[in-house]
Length: 113
Length: 114
Image (cartoon, rainbow over all chains, first blue to last red; front, side):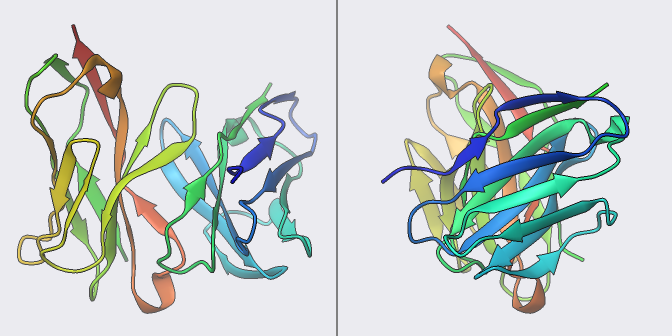
């Protein structure tokens, strides 16, 4: 079974631009979560989607948004990029969310210049 | 809220040495506990987990026991290899309304020298 895939793997943007990251979960998994990883803040939860609905959201500004499609693929969008948005963005999928085991993708490395 | 505290690194060991990475947590109820490993340039891989008190998770020679009385989940391995060099994260999912997300520790960088 294929793992979680994320595209693109690397991205360079400038301040003020917007960016869209994509995540394809493991086949059959309906829950997709997004995390931001930075050296200073570590791993922080962004949001979780289940059956095309955002079920939970972390403490991030409204510039961070996401969506999930009927095939469970998910995208996250960051508008008006700031230097501090430079991070590794990780997507994780699980069968149904909750305390179920989450499987992570390789991440998208976003650099904001 | 929930939190995880793990020993700060970096930890440098020689091959075949004994490894312990301490992890303690704060959470209400009975969270599920996890250790994830991140190799350079990669995402996180689940190493082991425990879902109730006194459970022992084990994988690839690594072990951790869910200790409710000390709110701990220390990672151990009897004999490390160079290939174990990575960043290790302790994490939990809470109960009830916070069971949807993983709360991570800061991570511990392990370097194993031949």
